[in-house]
Length: 90
Image (cartoon, rainbow, N blue to C red):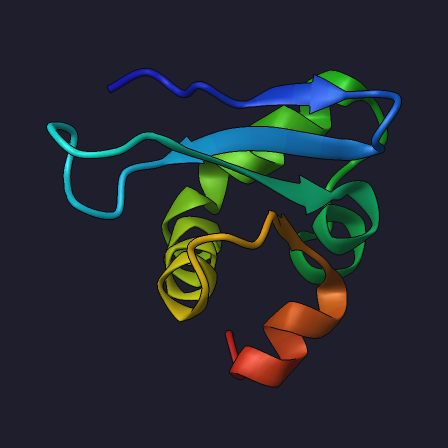
C-alpha cells in the first residue's frame, strides 16, 4: 500500500495512518513530531525529507503508534522522541 503520510506544518509533524486490525478494520490517524524524526531517525531538513524518513522507518513508528492506540484508543497519538526512549526502540 502506498504511504498516506503527509507533513503538517502547523503541527510540526508527519501525519500517518495505522490499521491496528488490518486494512479491513479501523483507520487510525497518528502523528510523529518533527523533532523525533530528526533526533531518533536522523531526518534531513525539509518537508519531503521528513515524510521520506517516516516512510523508511514506518515499521517501527507504526508499531509504537499501534501499541499506544491499544493502550488507550480514545487518546490522540502523537509520538515524540521520549516515546521511543521509553519503549526501548532501537
